[in-house]
Length: 129
Image: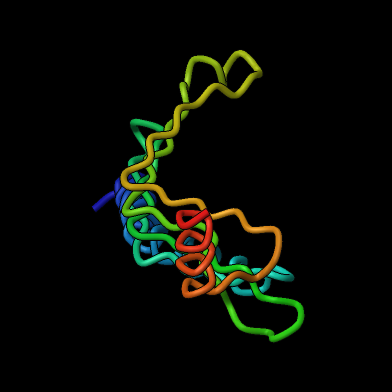
């Protein structure tokens, strides 16, 4: 085999290996970043990459807020999947244009830590007034 074909074959093989390993590297990095966020903790179950389409899909993500008084996590955000995509044309022109699609997102805002039992009591009291 000529040296040129060996080099081309080696480059193609390297690109295939990188493509196979890349989703696991991205998933590890994302979970590490979510775990190290101050005041929050999160986890991603799986990431699917679609490089040609310029998109990736996050399958089951949650983000919990850590209570500053009790250090217990409380639900903040979760979604079954998030599909993120970018337009390659815009990237080549120097700007980033993208689209986000959420499946079953839940976002919970609270001023203070509120227990579910307290919410029911408040509703019963206000309903009786």
